[in-house]
Image (cartoon, rainbow, N blue to C red; front, side, top):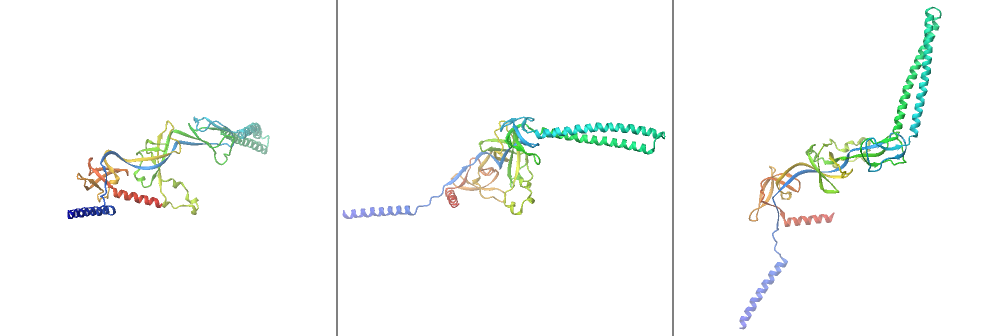
Length: 400
């Protein structure tokens, strides 16, 4: 009995030793699990390829209403945000100086007209004298000298009348100019629109000698124009007439649809005259991004779109409705014929490689033209690869 008990103890001890060794091995030398595949099914969706651009919303018509007369603004008849009609009185400038100038011009005109009446009387007198001299000279009753003197006096009187007539015309022009300048003291709205800025308030003095100072700015908010900055890399693919949509920061879920009206032929930087800029202040434009402005208009009946808002613009280059599509992350290398390598899960949970032909690509999903079916499942990666990429991204973020 003692020997059998000892035998049992030896067997139990051996089993316990084996179990202990297995536990140590599992603890310190864990077996590497095969990474799980990250997959996605082939789906049927709408795919569109777009060009992204950031734009600024501005009124289709924006007019700076300036003052063509100098003086103090004595009355401002509009306020910020007011709706004004074309021809409506916006502001008034003190007309004292311009009124005095008009009165002075009218006085000079009256003086010239009086002088013209005097010169006309002198001309009639000279004409009578010249006619009598001609008659008496013909009868040999007066000398040639008397005749020549009468003729010269008549010619002089005629010339003086012509000179006064010229003075009258100049005086009339001066009166008209003074009257127009007096009219400039009343600032009139040139368009129907909304007052979007009051640049010069009531009581301030304006000087219109060199430039016309701006009093208010009027904008027609019924139609807005978006100026979208298109990268030089995308400009060759963009042309007028293409469909587009945009959103604003205040309502990113709502899309506004329009068509591209024009693409400016040169970037805005071309308008800067570099010849007038010192060489030390000029920058090397070869290292800076170049953008071309794309223009399009959008109706704005409710005035939801306001000047200087930012628009996130998507210009549609092409689109496919109800197309087979897969995430772009599933795309592998590119073949010589342009096809892309894709890994597909087969029925036995194995993976096979296929070359597929793709179409529109919006960087999130890509259209599949051939090589896949709607019930296929493609491989995006595996858990180990994704975890390694996430760890690398975290390390990179920690070092920056």
